[in-house]
Image (cartoon, rainbow, N blue to C red; front, side):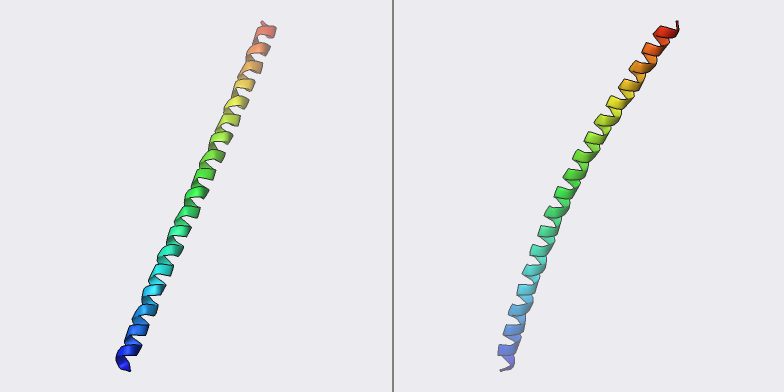
Length: 68
């Protein structure tokens, strides 16, 4: 009877380990997608900043040409 309980307990604990590993892998995949999305958002923001900077520079150059 004691061996039977030990065998059952070992099987249950092994099952928990597999569940934990699966949960960790799923969590890692979600984090990877979050990082990729954040990188894309950063790239879009940098692009918009560059465009705004160029527009400001062009306006400044145009006003400099008008004032001369």
